[in-house]
Image 1 (cartoon, rainbow, N blue to C red):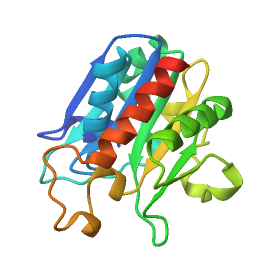
Image 2: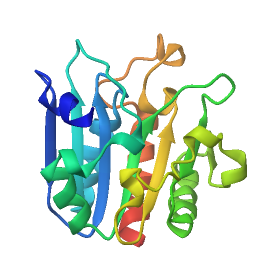
Image 3: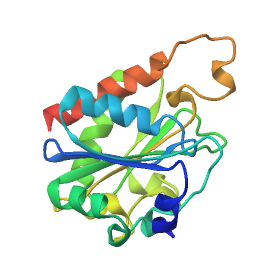
Length: 196
């Protein structure tokens, strides 16, 4: 299924080889909007490696993370072989959680570290890194999830629409390009990765 997505017209797959930190946004473009833009900004500021899949405006094909298989992508395989650990950016929306970011994934020390830095730059948001408080399907713990495949595992960061500059909260609040909240999120991620 992932191979079919990559072969679909208009879908782009990009890998940047940089440092041992990896940033992923494989649901980017029109699907989980702004995750790829955030990844680009973090990579530009840190020199991290990146793996990004962008879907065109006329496509919103969600493939569960556990099915994003490096067997179907030499670029993803090379990325996972290169990095020591990864942070994977995802978009989600749930009633009552529009200001809640969720830090799942197998590297719990890194999840706590990333969550702490984001809390310092986004005081108006709740950043949850306690797995018991994260809905099961958003914990990012499946062993086949690409964020867990680097040598030291990784963090799956679920981002609600508001922090990505999307949704009705931003109606009438003009911003060009990246919203102020998104810039603050990027600052927290950059600080966390440089400090790690």
